[in-house]
Length: 356
Image 1: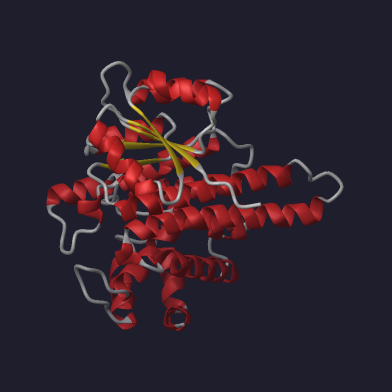
Image 2: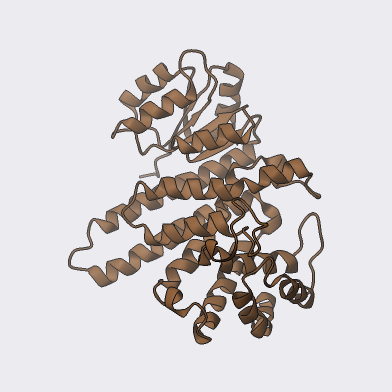
């Protein structure tokens, strides 16, 4: 018996767009194309789609109105929706995500990008169903099942993180490296008694696992900004800065649908505050000193260290020694001086792991 194909429904009032989407997807998926919300709901009465690609600007019922109806029904609330729209401003993308969409793709789209996004989200949905199936059978096998759930959670987070990295290919490997650096930094802080009370109250594995989502907000940034082969303009940088808030919003929307919140709370704080600076000159809120969550103060150092020591489209990689100098000079300004002190004390360990 062969593996059943996923069903994708594309909703757009433009026949050309429907034809393009069908052509891009039909080799891998079963595809229904409909021109209105009313026709979509008619299809759903007969066949439940695995994913919906939804246009926003349509005459009878907008995409925003359609997703509200979908999310209000228990039967359709969990169908993943990706907005496929010509509206290329960040406010439209964030509004779509706030309403429950899992992604937002700007038209015109490339076939390769569309397929990658769909593959990632369909994989996430499969893993969520697998996680739920295991979670419903925990009684009598608590220890074994807890381990499985943890591994599945980590797999889901890794899938989401890799989905972001596929878009932002200038940071390939960034998420895995920063995880390793963060784990080391927490261990060294505990050894030296720095922030021991707060760190000891955390599950360090959950913190490290959650750090995979620190850049998830980049999924809402336009491709021409995210993948620009050069320095961003001041206006483009302002758009890029929005990824911190967008990332936290995305994670909060996930928190609302699950009872397991510990690792997501870490992820939310990491995403929202890792670009804040000790002296209050960072973003998005200009927090300073201990107003910045400890998660963000930790991530700030490992994120910057990795960015400095690896090549980007707009710069060459700097040496470990240059990175150490920059972090040393930034202690008390960009970075929490107590955390920077521990990083500098063990900087050769970070160099060793970076080289590996």
